[in-house]
Image (cartoon, rainbow, N blue to C red; front, side, top):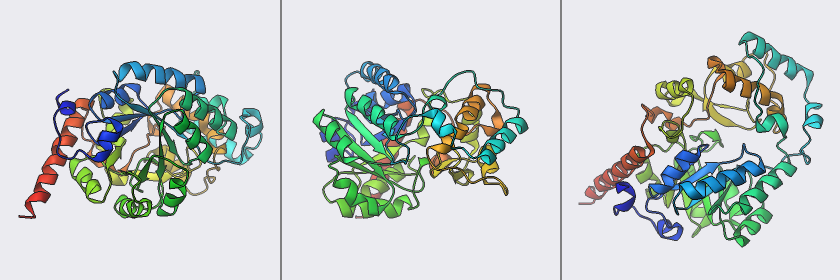
Length: 369
């Protein structure tokens, strides 16, 4: 691919360390997007946190072939939760009756048939037992990079590094930077409030330079609302050595997102995303839909803490996807959704990002004359 082979103007030291051409990471729940970004010279990272351990191994095997020798990563969530055992029946017994009634009210109001296919959260509980099994699978997978979100256990970092994997942690607050660096991770992603999915409270422009200053020579990757070359240039100016992107890949041909969601993404602006605990129990930025509105409406119960919220809503959300219940279909999305205005290929998106970044850096260089 031309974009991956040409000498770009913003190659950073991290590119040489990782064996990539372009300092752009992608995060996607799509094998095709992950592989296409890696083949294009970036670093594709596959979101595997919704997969069982054997599925993680299968995904890694597929990516090794699809990436054609280029590096790729796997990303899972490793938060600390109070539930030790992966016991769905025991977790079900902890769900308050008022919350069950509310979900049944949503099912009746929006005429949601039962799900006929299973999802991870219909069988399992986000528990320390499940996290350990998923982490073991990532370490055994042969992936080049182990990305950890919403938690960075030092023992997992040590085991992954001993297995020859690079390790990466996503953080959303300056106060987490020194502690996470102490675990021995190789890379840090400073993810601002603008980001889609699980996110914190500090904006990207405020967060990134603080983290860069705190961690010193540890490479920092900027994340949160990044979808244009101007933003990549700004991230580099703040001291980041690469960027982490997510929402823009939802609007690629390779991702095969449901057309209902695709149309919503294309029509949405930054203010059409909201922070909600309605899916995982933790703060998560998503497209605003009837799902988020119902959970924030007066009289609605407060979402349960992780992992109980997903125990409560796992089946209905899978049913919503399966039966395409349009009002309740949502997607995690960052404020960069404002730049999603159509569907393009991964190659076209990478080429656009490279061209825009080089143009932005040229404009900045001209200011010094």
